[in-house]
Image (tube, rainbow over the protein chains, first blue to last red):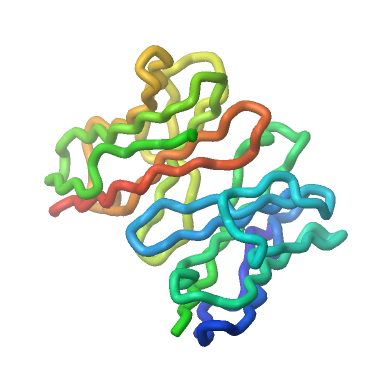
Length: 115
Length: 113
């Protein structure tokens, strides 16, 4: 069974630039959730993708967008980067419709630094 | 708005001490409750979960948690901690039929050998 993988592991971008982060879900999972974890805080829900459509969104502006592909992998795109976007971005996969459907498995995260 | 509170941001214990980490949530409906752990240099791992049934749930590595619905609490316990329990612990909640996890700020636990 392959776990959740994310790429890249680290990334440094300049304010105003755009970034794409990638996530491969765990084998057999059909749902991907993205979280932002700022230093010293718990993760904050960005959005979730199920069957290639957004299935819930947290309190993040539209410059945070995503995609899910037919193989259930996913991308998180952030446009017009701001300094406050510096954080660890976590991807979690789960199986919606299975048992247990609420259990999420996390990848190692991508550390984004915006300068 | 729904929220999760973890009462202690930092806890320092000696080996063999008993542990209890507090977690309270604000949501009036049915919830699913989780504790995740992040060991140094590793990614988040599920420690234990509560969906329904017996409110006392057991997880990995000797951890357990008790769901007290009347107190909106889901405290994590371990009778005797080990140095290897040094990690950050997160409580998370998802309202039933909603897969969004709402997280506490985390508790950094340091076990002195």
